[in-house]
Amino acid sequence: MSKVKLLCNSLVVLLAFWSALLVVVPSYAQSSNKVMGELQFIPATQVEKHCGIWVDGEYVGYLDELKGSRKVELLPGKHRIVARESGYDQFSQTIVVEPGQTQAITVSLVKDPNARMPAVTAEVKLDVTPNRAAVFMDNNYLGPVSDFGGARHALVVGAGKHQFKIALPGYRTFETEVNLLPNQKFVLKTDLVKGSITQAGSLIKKP
Image 1: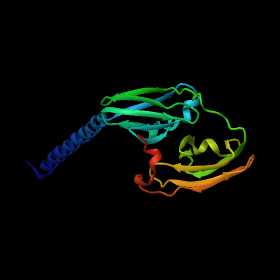
Image 2: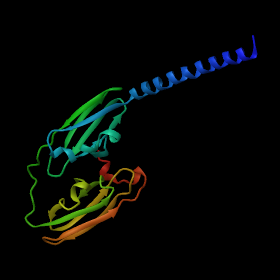
Image 3: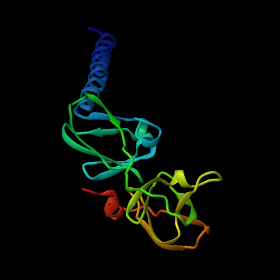
Image 4: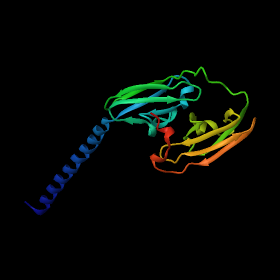
């Protein structure tokens, strides 16, 4: 057998080997992803779109953003889902996630019968980065920052002292106290500092 023919045969074998690898690797990668199950959150009304979602006690974001690159994928097994919104009773549901399956969860909130609008109010606008961070006032979840900023959005609260906390996993929690006068318009401005998940604060790690 000539050297040229031997070289050609070797190249054919090598190409066949690499072709086999190209077929096997994507197939393996695809099957490995089937270990995780995916959650899809469906709001019952417009109210639920910006409610906060906790999975197994960890805040994962507000409902309307939990899709695409921010979709929620979980290991198979039991998980507890909690949704919170100011002025509404807490939504809670325990689910079982199956490998490779997508599960739809409809979140429906019921108004808190004890919720009352204060007689004397003030207005707070938020100018915070990132604007998807969760806003807490007096330890109650209100919504994402984006709900309370810009020209047409503001938070109407009772006049007096209030504790504000802005939190997001992967950032240090920002905390401040404000004393609002009746009819005052106040702007709360800050940029969250990146940090460890352990620095995010207890409010986004609720049981």
